[in-house]
Image (tube, rainbow, N blue to C red; front, side):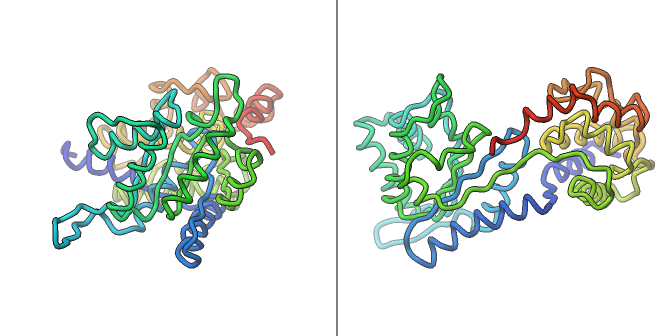
Length: 325
């Protein structure tokens, strides 16, 4: 296989979106906030919360793809570039004023000046001029949670005011630390009536479980990409268990393993599709911090791996990756 074809397949793998019930429910909630704003002409938002690797970014990009791409709007005075969707990642260690400044820098303002209120007003003005219909604020925990792991209540007030003045839906995304963010300020909760939590997958060997069905759909999508059947299918019980041990159910880490495995497959044994050896290679290559064992799970059989999953140590570690109720 030539390098161009290989790279195209790997890029296509990155673009695969596998829907599953929890993902679809979260998708529906984000769309509700957008639709409610359109119908009532009052801005509503949604909170999307989950551990890194739970699928938040993939979901946001899927929502983003539903909107028209950037376009030019011609007026009597000028031709203006319009951006229907703005996806903005909150910088590290930023204040409200710092976020407003970062927004202006995103718009090409080289040296933003003024108070936090003035820069916020300028950012909102630019958003309206660009006919922005939806704003994503990702990694919101960087703004709302301090070193003491406490919510900055005034920051929630600023976000509420920002949404009110913008008049458009805003989706804020954060890690597990933000799971109770709506409980602190009534006005914030009212403006963000929807919250979607994305969890890591739980292990269930049943072929009809959410985890198994997701792997089955992913396996089929990969076969369509490479044009042949995988020798070892993702939904095969031994592969399913080993992948779970390596990732603790993280969709993000699963995709990293599949990327490395497929890259090896395309270079060595494309006619066989993905094999157990490809998965084992990927797990050796990666530093799997969330793995339930220090050993490569593809070096063991199904019975051994099931014992690992049911061990007290694994159960305790998996509890750490559950969102607080």
